[in-house]
Length: 431
Image 1 (tube, helix red, strand yellow):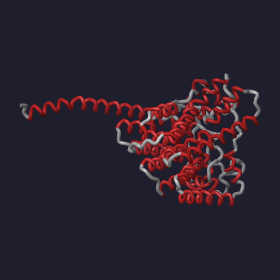
Image 2 (cartoon, rainbow, N blue to C red):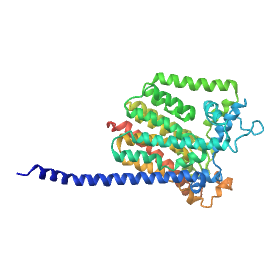
Image 3 (spheres, one colour):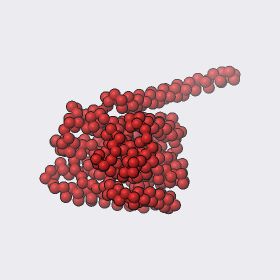
Image 4 (tube, rainbow, N blue to C red):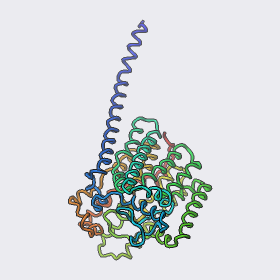
């Protein structure tokens, strides 16, 4: 009969393989996280040094001058402080304080609050502070995402999704606001994974709309989820703040509505599904006139809206999938989708992967996470000096389609995946 000492030795020996496997798994996870961190640090360093600039159209076309989109809000905030319309961009009519900027395009609240506050600082220091805020926000999102599930490998994957994602480079290069909006979307997604949405999630939705109005697309999902009180509050705040400003500055209304104008044409920096559709149709029928392209685009928008509404009304009230569906629909519906916009899909990938652990989602994330093929199309950076190149389709037509498909096809595939999940699947949420 074996002694207790021999039994203990045998049990310890049986545990050794498991312990060794766990150590190897931990080492692999740590190595993956380290690689993601190193790549992330390389993007931060390139913000100053510029060695990744040649890999994107935006950083090439702007000749390495950073902060264009940030300074749009900065200048608008200064306009507000000096009693001028935040939508005014005629240099002869405003006190120009930004070193460079694009016309302000968002709702008034962002410029009147954040823009006004930041405009009190020296422009370059304001940009630096905003980039630090973006970085802290991203690290917070990575940490929060890793807390959404218990499996070690899944937690590592969720954190790496934020850290090793190339559209983030343009987010800090341009000083954009998409990542901060994504943080609010992630908060809503986490509420969906937790089982229910509450008033605080309505507040997050309101904040995301005031930052960038594309979040209004979540309205059909909120209606399906019967969040009528939240819809009333959000709609009231957005409507009142916007119309109050329009009442004071009537010329602001055309500027706000101008975001909906969609005269589609070739644009090298556009990575939306509608740009891909234009490239495909133009490649097949190069003599087709602009009016025909417009009708094709309108039919496409109608189809996407009707399918999304049908899926929304037909499916079970799965809050996570509905929020993800309408967040993703933006990339199929909007006419100007820039590369940095794709950071807004990170909460979608995080929520869906935390729910299902699907390798298909990892593949789609990977296709979006890598650089576009721009560096191979324009290795000499001619877009920085030849403005016509920005508006001219690539030749041959297949190259133009391939280039614009690099982000648009994964976005379209993600939308189809979510539609299918809503219609055909009823698996439980895994956390």
